[in-house]
Image (spheres, rainbow, N blue to C red):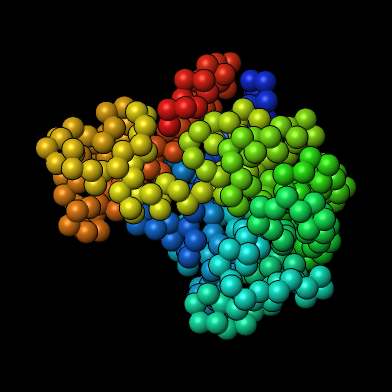
Length: 370
């Protein structure tokens, strides 16, 4: 049977906020959508079955980490990333560019060869060109593939950011060519340009000429303030194509998501819910809770009485405080699942309010609370 082609459509909108549907041969994804991060072929401390119970419809895998361990050939021999990790959800893989910047102390960027870097695990030298990044992602059999880009750190140096943006466009052209024709998969371009409006607009226009399946906003989880991030999204909200998904990479907090949806963003990923869950920070409809705090030692109420997934309300704050203060791994597992579930409940409420035309009121109620 022929595989279903990748497609996207906007179902309804409330000003810039939009409800959409991404169609893939592995299943549909309602947008705005949050993608739990499965860095090394696992969403840390969770099974895929539990991830699905939260309402998650897509997860993210990490090209950089998977190419280092266990290596793409091992995953290919296992039948691809989905079979390797027993996941029947769609998977988006990033290109590896961000990790080259953030993790590798010794790296060099070459226009032709790509990124030359030493593994953060054992120091082994790797070459990651646009062609190699696409080859790896296709070898993983991911459903949404990201172009290879350079993700610079936050800088006020216009010439530096301009040079980096131009390099990312050059790599985007090579990524597009290497991807070829794969109608049942998608290739997303990545908009760079730092905090400079003209560079962001120029980057987008160059990518539009290459006609990608979706457009991501990169370089916004690198130290900028929330106001600066929203300003960049304001630069782009009238320029992004209406009929393609808009993806804000590596972001973020619940309030980041609310503000970005208000500015037309459809897709998000972030390690925050899982990383916070492992360290004792819970996201709830009443705000954040540091479960290690001694005030919870005799609190037998659930983490979040407003949580719709009642299975997560079986455990009291008192019990979770005990688990974390005795370093029991079950505490990390419960809080991680709570946080992913909260993010998915947030996305569901966002979609519901967009459909009802009440997103602005919902945004204003929670933007400073969550």
